[in-house]
Image 1 (cartoon, rainbow, N blue to C red):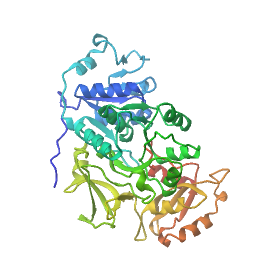
Image 2 (cartoon, rainbow, N blue to C red):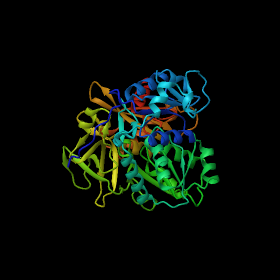
Image 3 (cartoon, rainbow, N blue to C red):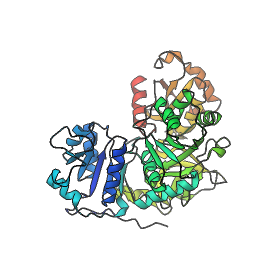
Image 4 (cartoon, one colour):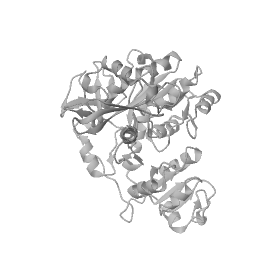
Length: 470
């Protein structure tokens, strides 16, 4: 059944002025500003503090915060947005006020706005940009009730104890990084913030801080394993999301006694939708587990619900699901009778375990045949000389689209030199597992796969890289 979804409230001038943008690197001051803003009843808009000036200005214009909180590094770019700016550090520019200044020391207009008794629709406690792997990132509205429901459901799946200590090393302008900030506060447990992931530093923090849980993307886990990481016995949870994890990586993790929990989640669902526990990973390495408490997952094909084992679009409903996007048209097109249309292709088995096959709009139509990139990637990455791969569809005058692969070889020497990889042998390997129309017609090597800072493959950048190198 379609649920009524509240609309965003506007500020006293007709604009959404009761919003505070935060462009601060992961640190205690970010959390302080976050909770202070929420305590005032205002909306928090986290920005990537490393965004170039033009990109930051665009996101500020789209979300219309009354002011922006910066740190020393982001201060010049925040000033260029034309909004009042407060800094968690000592200001470098006279136009910037210190965030913790006495009320009389802050510029009048900004201080007046912050000092008002403010209430907003709690359907807009948080505004977050989606990862934006292709196209224009959407702005997602999240309510405190969404965040609270997510925290409770996560606790039921992963467990929580009074002595838990979570390590946050993901960006705080994405839901994967923010979720532990909310969960830890509501659980009454400890959160350790690492400014950014660094293999040696992360390993050291897990040891020295008694870390019991950490959120990672597959690339980060792989780097830890490549460095010979052996986790301490008190580490109970490695929540692995942001991008698909292949079976070989999960097997390596389990062999190293890493308590890996593959998860599938969205910004629109305040983090986790489904999560697998370590005890089930080896038997079901392609699954992200069953949906969490209160979360309903439906698989639809052409609007009709399909049986277990059949693939279709993943639809999610429940108390963690966003009230809507900032763009009302985007909300109307994404919400249906069964809930939120995720745009992800998936399948559920007879026990309700969910397997994600990729994005529907990533599916390649080559000569009328449909190719799911994730299937081709899995076969490519099973080849011993391939470290990782990404597959996209490129325009083709004969076939409409052709399957194209960007691969990172494991061979030594210059990875950009295609002569160091036997492409014919690679394609022979693929022919053993893939139909002819699924074989990559273009194979290009590179030093790395372009990714967003949330760990997902940046498909536009991959396509551009292939076209540049072919």
